[in-house]
Image (cartoon, rainbow over all chains, first blue to last red; front, side, top):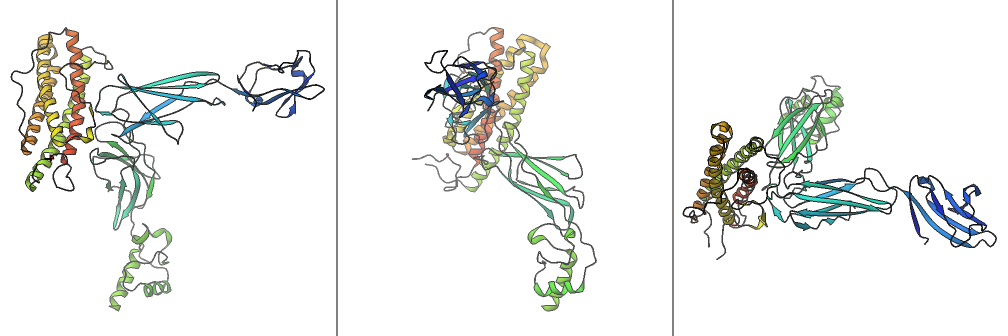
Length: 335
Length: 195
């Protein structure tokens, strides 16, 4: 393996052909392709103002014998800019994690080193296997007013840089968004939507460290959100929805006492229940349906009695109001 | 050895805990407001680091989740009794320093002092419920601290209020732990002592 040579973007690079004299006849190649003599000064290869595309394997061969006299891997890159560091506790009170990245790529390998100090005490931030740019710490103390100081240093062959973050235990607490958000219409209630969700699974002890929630919803056709803050419970009924309009709904979570709000959950869509139109399509379709379900009030999902757009809800609750009446009437006859 | 809870004891404990949690929440909100006022009116830098002050109970605790219920109650009680004395002293110093010029700050301090006293009493109630002897308060209290300069007084006040704000959060958490029914015995976790 040939040695690696790192150079900054924009630098002028001079390569010597090993121990060959300046006036020796040589041929330079890059990645197996001959390099034009205009880049040579004697036997030296001169690369001015190098750019990223000039990274590669450079080889120098003696003129007549074609012996390989020198070889190097050139890697063009940049020294690191100040890294971006973020620390957060989404599993309070167990611990917190810090993650980082570089604002711009360096195109060469970087090494990151992180140190965490709590007052005068050094703490170990255990690096995660995946993702690589993350480490986590277990809290040894809770309810401390002493701040944590995290220093991240990034080093590569062309330079180094660092950043620090100082924070207290409470400030970085930010749960993950609520999970499994579900919104359903409420039968026979054209202005209601029932929303339920679960605590984020990363929050270890919701009983001792309860979360409060923030719900936002709006009809797709409007830009303005409605907001509801809920101090406990993982469900809520919206009672002022516009009839027949599809809604978009999201939920966020926060520890009841400390920290900041989570990001918004994945958005769910739902449309409130609407009353079915009174007319039916054909007599034949009614007969087909009622023979299949004589004692059930629910029409099977594939029923064609209703127009697709007139069926609301999902699964077992999907029912055409008038079809249900017809079925019920026939059921009574068969009892 | 503790006997299993009677239903009425369990109910009373839960009631005291939920009221205590609400008290702690209100207290914390008021202390945080008071901190803002205090920093502004005392001309302090809000981000100033204050070294741990002698006599101020630190909320920081290791292995918090392993504490027994009794430990939680006793540590909380000791802390709020100390805060009661510290706030009373701050109020006194406040009056000496500024007289009537800063009545608002004085009133806010007095309101928090009242809540701290109420919370201490609440904790005593919880301890009584567990048939625990309530530790007596030390005779005349600790010896009076050396006379501090005005600036040192202000910094100590900052330290006191900051720790009190932490304690208010911790207390709410402690009471929630206390209120949890233990699955096996029906007693609150940690309140049953091993023989």
